[in-house]
Length: 300
Image 1 (cartoon, rainbow, N blue to C red):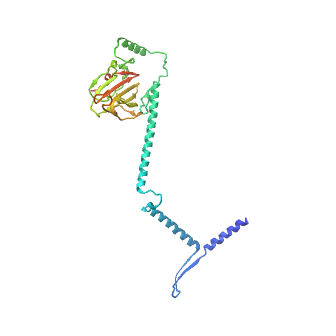
Image 2 (image 1 turned 45 degrees about the vertical axis):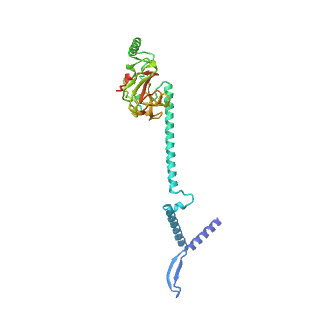
């Protein structure tokens, strides 16, 4: 305790001496006449010197920061190097964004493929029509309603006489009752669908570089290039519909992209060994069976 009091006493003595007033006198050298005099203390001198030191440091920092003097600092990049660093940062950021986007699309594609393999329809977040369907809590799956019995008899009778039946056992009037299919392109059909010859779609002649559009809202599940069919793209639609577009010169979408009806997805071309001129080979599949596109789409 005594030591602490002694230290405090020494500090007070030093502080008091620092505040003692001193008089600075300026004399004339010739006659020692007093010209000026100033009264101050050691503490005031310390405060003034500290202020000017800080001010000088601030001015020096500002001068170096806002002038070309900063380029003289070792290791400081010149304007050209700074621009290169900015450009590299932008490129890295763009590549990172593209990588994240591709990762999300790959996840969406894998999810869609898994749903297709499981027999369900991939549901896109933009398509909320499925939310409007509400199951009937009172329905019994083991009981068949009279309307369903009538429909089954109707289908069986039409299959028996081969009237208006589409491969796969679905009536053409029942497969797409409310869907309005947009024509992928407008043009003359030069080769019709012929399952017996292995031609599962139609060939539509069109000018080169014309846009090919999606027939319905859906998700791109496949696109690739093959020596025979050129650039090919597949779209998964609701109601287990898949549309296929072949011989394109360029694909405008990526796997996992959601496309709307009438939205351009490719450019008409003449790619692939099976192509003899600019045209689109278009196929429409339902539950694994080919449908005749001319029944559902007006290409004229």
